[in-house]
Image (tube, rainbow, N blue to C red; front, side, top):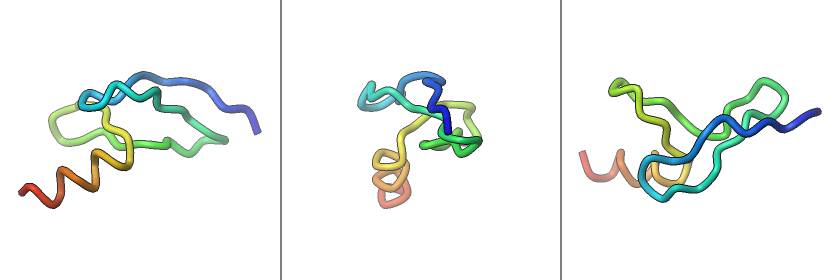
Amino acid sequence: MEKEMVGYCAICQKPIYCNGGFLEGNIGDDKVLRCLACTNEDEVCF
């Protein structure tokens, strides 16, 4: 499977990859790209 970089996390600036069709991060309702770690931290804040 090929891993392709799609962008950087808006919070920690970590590169986010698409791995075999699976995005290793999340795009929220605000259209902001976040890595999985920052997405989980954000859910705790709400």
